[in-house]
Picture 1 (spheres, rainbow, N blue to C red):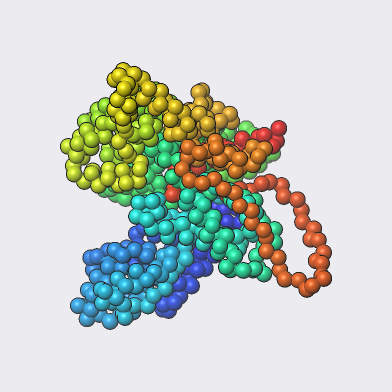
Picture 2: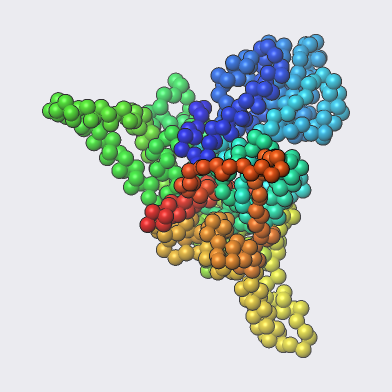
Length: 616
């Protein structure tokens, strides 16, 4: 896995990656000499963004294994466990150590917990009887640069832990990561946000900075102008929708983890890549997608409908380059030199391979998106967010998709979307019964968790409200009053209010330069509408939107951080420092609880819109 290029980042993200790399090598060097590294599988991807295998080898790592309960056979006398601070990992480590003891192997063990050493994990090791056999340490892995414009905490279960399990550790890690970011790039002057988790992180960040006190090495001039904290809870609609960008559809179809996609072997083979002899067509091959792939950079953020035309233009361009090569014998020396300069700027064979790969992927995805199942699901999503279908009709449509054995996760997403857009589902009990019949009893745990989170709930409907009316009203009058009351409630709270106040449904959004709704073919993510308003607030400021954003959960806030100043003797006035004026405004948008590829694409389109306005 090659390192991601960070040269064009708005701030020096290479320094952030270097800090994580240095901290990793310091952890590894706590165990001197040659060693085996036993790695938590969930850390393989994040560590690949920080350090290459060669770096590990330079610091004594001879062999690398994934942590498991089955015995790990190794000829190394020293074993370093690098794992997340989770109870199952501690039990797996204890199992390995007991197995070595049974085999009469005397080995040295070092357990490095990520992102911190916890008392709970220590207690598990003690209960398992191996606490005295290990040395303990921690690796503070927090913000990891994934792209020139993306950093990530890589905590895949952060939303679940925070909102379902009540474990707020991920919020603490976020605040701590932002503190370290400020030590590199200066104190961020303005913090804006929406949501309970966002407010908690902002409060922790300010408290940490106050407790830490003034830092002499803190940069005097901030490189990041504002921090926008978005709690995932404020927008649970967007993650439920089918992503419609090229990268988003790759993520929905194959899954993207740490910039790595596992593609079917036949796609790679058709791209002209070397494959092992006798390899099965169904074998998965890992491919890295990032800004080093120029074609992917062009395709990733556009709506899938436009992918074909861009791929065709690329193919035409490469063919013209090849044709020009065949005609060089008739060219002048100057024209030949110009052609050579063009070739030096890119590797034509590599570009051909990439074109072949993306053509194969696009054709595979096209076959999926033109299928009837995909169309039905997308039509239902669009009808729900546009308000063209009620709860009962939506429930019936979802039942039909269930009976056709649609993937369980896609059904859950549709249920959550239908529940949110209609303030609950009256037929929820029937839907739950059908889910058990189709997907088995295991489905009930997922449904229970969604209900516990408030993402799935039973709707009362008009008849339920009418039943609670005074006895003097007739049934017809009661239903009429209830219907009016329901409409009034929907207009001031819930999906209808959100839709109108934030203008999230946009007709004819075909041009990315016009509106970010282009990314989802007519739907502008709620989260991105929040970002738009935070970047360009009304005259009264960000907090003046309190009433407008009231339908969304959690507080709206804005905090100003004053930069720290080094101590100066009484009566001494430091001379003003001459600094060149800043050429652009740098904002950091921090999603707490995860973000979709579609939302990242929308942010990029938003940036292009701002740049075009500034240039106008």
